[in-house]
Image 1 (cartoon, protein in one colour):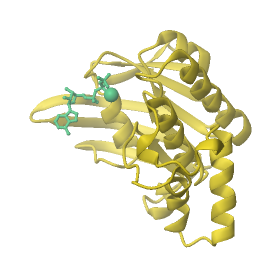
Image 2 (tube, helix red, strand yellow; image 1 turned 180 degrees about the vertical axis):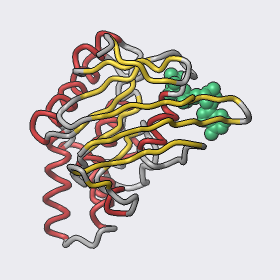
Image 3 (cartoon, rainbow, N blue to C red; image 1 turned 90 degrees about the horizontal axis):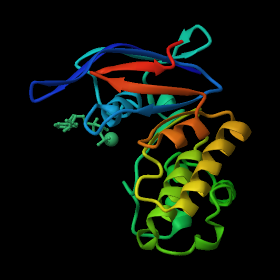
Amino acid sequence: MKLIVSDIWKSYNGNAVLKDCSFSFDSNNTYALMGPNGSGKSTFLRICSLLEEPDKGEINYFSGENILKKDIGLRRRITLVLPKVGMFNTTVLKNVAYGLKVRGMGRKEIEERASNALEFVGLTHKRDQNALTLSSGEAQRLGIARAIVIEPEIIFLDEPTASIDMKNTKIIEDIIIKMKEQKGTIIILTTHDIAQAERLAEKILLMNEGKIISIPPF
Ligand SMILES: Nc1ncnc2c1ncn2[C@@H]1O[C@H](COP(=O)(O)OP(=O)(O)OP(=O)(O)O)[C@@H](O)[C@H]1O
Ligand SMILES: [Mg+2]
C-alpha cells in the first residue's frame, strides 16, 4: 500500500493551515512528522486518515498501480490512534473486541484476536478492568491494541507518547517498532521529540509553513 497526498489545502476560519502540501508515503517505512504547536500536524493526520476533507487537493491510496476507492474497505485498512478518544465504559477486552464485533465476526475469533492484540501491547493482565480507569500510558497502549486488532496496513499515531513517563514511552516505542517489524505496518506518527523521531523513523518530516519537507531532503 502507498499513500500519495497531492496539493492539499486546508483553512479554518480563513487561516490556511495546510498550503499546497504534498507527500508520498511508501510501504515499509516509519515516518515521524515534527513541527511547532499549531503547524498542522494533527490536521494533516486527520485528513490522511479520511476523517476530514481537505478544501482542495487529493488523498489517494494505492495498491500497486490501482487507486483504492474511499469506501468502508479502505477505512479498515488505515486507522488513526488518538489518545483516550472513543473509549467505551466497559472492560479493556470489550473495548478491543468492539471493532471486530461490528464487522460481524464470530465470538471465538473475536476473543482470540482481541486477546492477541492485548498481549501485543502488554495489557493482558488488564483485560477485565474498566477502560476508563486505565492510566494514560495504559490507555495509549489500549488505543494501539484497538487499532491493530483490525490489522490495518497504515497506522497514524498522533503524539503517541505525549504526557507519558519514560518507562511507558519505551514500552510504546517498542510496540511501534514491533508493529513495523512483525506486521509490516506503515507507521506515520507525530512527535515533538527529535530523539524519538530518530529512534523510530527512517524518514523525519517537518511541517513547515503548511508544507511537508523531508529532513534531510531526499
Ligand atoms: N476544527 C478546527 N477548527 C478551527 N481551527 C482548527 C481546527 N482544527 C485545527 N485548527 C487550527 O489549525 C491549526 C493547526 O492545528 P493542529 O492541531 O493541526 O496543529 P499541530 O501541529 O497538531 O499542533 P500540536 O503540536 O500542538 O499538536 C491550529 O491553529 C488550530 O487551532
Ligand atoms: Mg497535534
